[in-house]
Length: 311
Ligand code: XMP
Image (cartoon, rainbow, N blue to C red; front, side, top):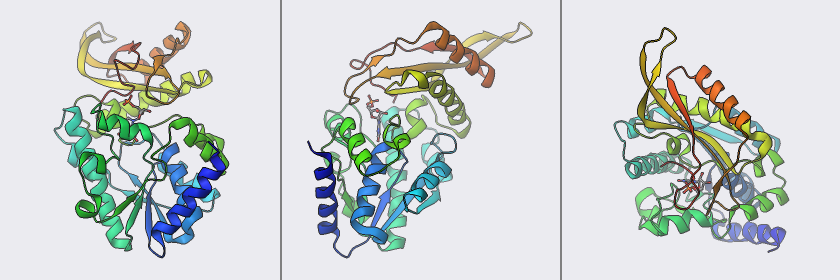
């Protein structure tokens, strides 16, 4: 495919669909929504309002970083702090699909409010082909897929979804991002799931447990950076394991699984053969930074039969 022609066609399509209407872009800072946002901005200029929802499930410092990156592109990003709403929606939930559903509902309820307040008729989002394929195959319902699971966005949330990237896989999304002038640190970035750290937290997602995941993810990302994996992160399991306190007592603590995978389009993946030294450094840093952790394990399962994330 010619990525420049694709981008020009999508800009034209967005313009033709929206006409004089208003659009809100759901920006998460990930590659897909970043590319969709730049396409929308090219098509609509100030008739596109860009919103970043701070749901409390993002990586550390994410909202400031996203704002700064897009400011440089001449795009203003409005941050909505909805952390309380998301954690309230997730309270007490442990089943993966229930957690995903609660996240999706909180996500679109937040946008419904923003869309209503702005008078917009459309929501622009970065849905890509695997999101739809895996939702249809019932692997799991991706947070941004509505129509395919029978949800009418207009009826349920009051907007029409615009999905300019829904036919693309990740490598092509990256190429379109490059052509649109996004910085390499955005289009080369590791994919990060819409529901964020929720996908890496088994059991209940409380602010304290999510903070453990955030710390583990940062350490794994930093220590694996030189290997340029497709994705690398830490996961907090819901079970516990016995460890020893410095005084030699018993301590029933948390378990962190380390995930680092090679993939092209996220449809299949295999575990990276990380050097033992790197794994030891990750283990040491996690044990030091998160005293509640008593075990660190490395996940070597390929996709399939596993998936990349844990919920
Ligand atoms: P899995 O875990 O299904 O993930 O092998 C495949 C790719 O999709 C990302 N992922 C998501 N992205 N919304 C997203 O935008 C989601 O609900 C979601 N769940 C998983 C995951 O990080 C991987 O790159």
